Length: 475
Image (cartoon, rainbow, N blue to C red):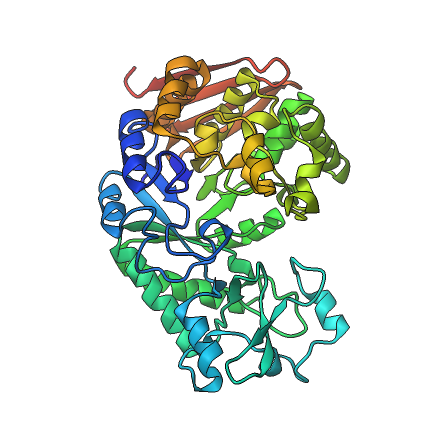
């Protein structure tokens, strides 16, 4: 792993496949990105790769594992491991459906009849569960012998939860992690990690101390290969702080909304407060393949400020409509807003470049989503064609379109230059210092310094003008 900006992309979103992705990176971004988070590139039955059938091969439409390993020679790579679930179409679940109790995979899954004392949860127990559905999280599964059972299912019906408490699942986790390490992963992202451990009479979300035991076992598995793990958890920022306190890397999911709040309101106090306390060993984001998370900033902004920021996304953003976050667009997730970050800032080049400058000066290693790297607007055409809310931020870029952007749009070239500066200046050492000041209410100053150099960002949060001054040791 290197202290250089990481690109987040699907294998078929900057070019049609892994081969074209490598071309695009080498042609346009070789100095801008040191790493790549390739969103799930394994065979999958749904959720754009997040319902994996297996992990030992790539989706044949995207390329080969050999191409992944080749990419890892020039860029440090992040892989996704869905520790919470596996595809309903996987050989594991199909074998279970066919053979039921005779299946060698029967203990991979959580059967309601075994999990709950009377085979069913009480309403009180259901109410305690941190869930994505209005009822208990399960699907009815029909077996080959004509019987049916309720099997735990947190997310979509193609994503069947794994029983992480059984030896067969722990061995599956171990084998999968080792394969990823051998196939070029530098970092393994633990998707939906907080949902993995379930216990009756709990929220079944980040259950302690069992979550720590699982996290430690996973780290012990990958550590001999020099691989880092990154648990993905969207919730109150205090959870990230707890994980960071135990020495693990975390995501900064609070920064996106805090930056929007600062640029909408012209106030830097809330943003300064967070930068002053956030962990150093974190990956910062403004945008990802999902929406802009709201739940992560609770108590960093007041409830009124959160509501105001959400409203500003719809009023000051470009083509951001409330209906895109409703059932009409297959999205009832109240915890995030579907929008590109560029459009959340009204497709305003000055505001957007400043937002990225703030991200790059914040502690941690920055991650830039591929649509963000292209300063992409909301893709209303894809949204309407699919009626999938999140697709507003999942445009497919062809090589020709990328070339046209770099030829004709100043913002993508300015952003690339800013990324190259962040990757090469020594002031941004992970263990270096980060000092924030508010000379005036609407002016934010961030100073990054290390033994080798210093860089200062001075930003006017109202006009979106900013300057960067820097020096290196010996100058």
